[in-house]
Figure 1 (cartoon, rainbow, N blue to C red):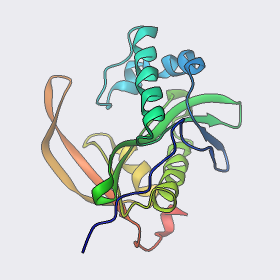
Figure 2 (figure 1 turned 135 degrees about the vertical axis):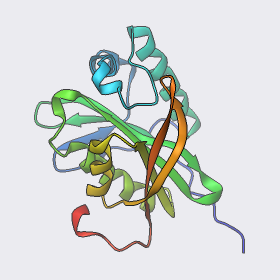
Figure 3 (figure 1 turned 180 degrees about the horizontal axis):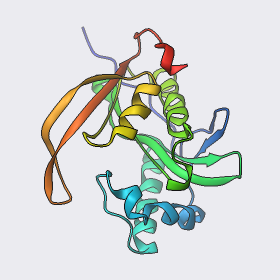
Length: 195
C-alpha cells in the first residue's frame, strides 16, 4: 500500500488560528523587536537548541529563514499574540515535517513574562488540530531536554503522551543531553487534560 503524503500548504505563510487567549499569525519583519525581547533572554534560551540572540541581526536572520519557509510552503511557524495586551509573546510551529510519513515535530518558545499562564499548551493544542485537520498528519511529536519539566507539562496538557527518554540524543551547549519524547496520533482518544 502506498503511503499518503501530507497536504501541501500554500506559499506566503500559515493561516491565522485563534484560541481563547491567543491569535496565531504569520510572522513579519516588523516582529523583530518583539522576538528579540524574549529570544535574547538567557533564561528563555536555556533549554532551547539555539543560543540566546546577541543582537538584532540574530533575530533578523531567524526571520529571514522563516520568510523563506513561508515562500516555499514548508512547515508552518506562527507568532503567538496574547489577546490580553496585543503583544507578540512567542513563536510556535512545526520544526520538521516528513510528508512521506505524515509526521511533524512541534516546537515553541514563550516570553518569560508570560510563563505559567497555560498559553503554550493552548497554542500547541491549536497546532495539533491544524496538523491533523489541515496537514493530514498521522503523528505529531515534540521533545524537550529531560530537565525541562515545564515543557514536558506543556506537552502533557496538550494531550501528548510520553514515549520515553532518548539518552545523549542532542549535543547542546557543550554537552550531550537526554531528550524526552512526546507524541500524539490522529486516532488517539482525547485525553481529559487536553480539553
